[in-house]
Length: 513
Image (tube, rainbow, N blue to C red; front, side, top):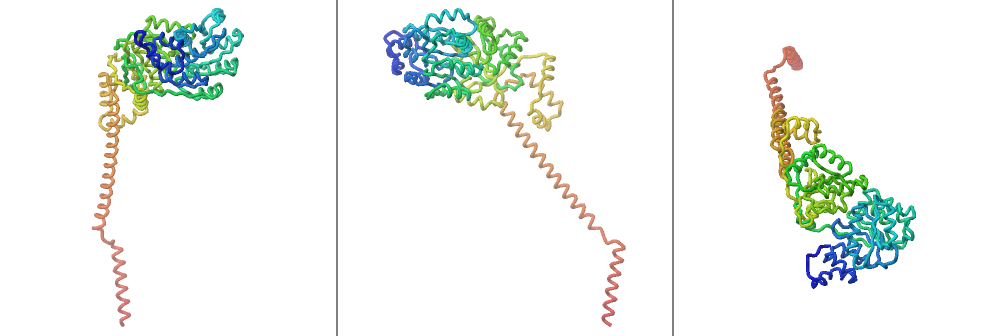
């Protein structure tokens, strides 16, 4: 859903036309306009009519495409305003629960909709007090919701609509068993809406069990789907150079707040400890943290108590921080949807942002695929050189593991240089800051040159071997011929030959007589 610029009331009807064509009433449309929105996004155009037809829906679209409004608006349209919870929305994190609740409140204000948030870390007594006020919509995390259901604190809990928001993230956080158990407490005649950025096999199997004859909606990435306020870069590094490259960039970039995305919780903790040990003020955010610790980490980051947040994709869902200047992809994202979600954390509220992705030469295909999907060409980021002490460098060399391809390159280099020259030249490259941050063209050219030189060298070696074999064969032949020419018959052989000739002559004389 795209936000509307400030306009006068005369353009209000025109702005609402896109949503009015989807079958929404004037009361709901007023909430859309009051929230400052105009034309529907693709996911809203397809999902809203399907939901209004009371069909189960499986909707796949990336984060930031307006999924919340896609299920909220038709639900608002169909509420009966009973004195009970009619809609249940399940989200993976507390942060996302509060964000969804806020958006429902804004869109549902003209209909006087009451919502309640249910999540861990909040007083159960307080939640029971809010539930007693008869809200129409509940937004909950799986764990706390299941706790309320098992304890019997939710009387006559018969929602008509159930939404699973960010289903893939609930899978990653291990909530799928809880989801299936929650459905054991729900009535059979409910309308189920499943929304997800990706569609892993486990989510497909869950959908088969809990949805009935669903409509499938998939919004594929389109060109220029990324924020134009975000300048996107990639830098080429070796697999073991991520930490060094990151420190160089952190020391030279003008960073206000930055989020570093990692693949796993373990990697997030490891990188956080690495940065802290080297004097960088940092925080971490991932699914294994206690709710109060996650809340404190986000609050401290918002208040700028530290400027570096190391986070996983799961934990960052629902983050609403408008002043992040930099986003780092510590590894290249697994797909374009994840990439767009990550870099969408910067360049917000009209501010400019930078997104920097670390890429190894083996990942160029993945990088090309992301660029094609999102319709953006990433610029090469040259990692700045930072001098280091000889002792630090020696320790780094001693700790470096030998790469599988190093031996092949070494053998190619040894055909032109001795070992000492190779070492001195590589050290010189390191001192000149050429060890990491090479451009794609540099890497590819180096690989082509080495491959070409290796091929030429092999061909040259084979040629020399063939010449040697040919020369050796010719020499042996000439030697044999040279020895045979002066060689005559031995004396014994000559005598025997004369005797045979004499006997033959005597025999012929006798016959003649």
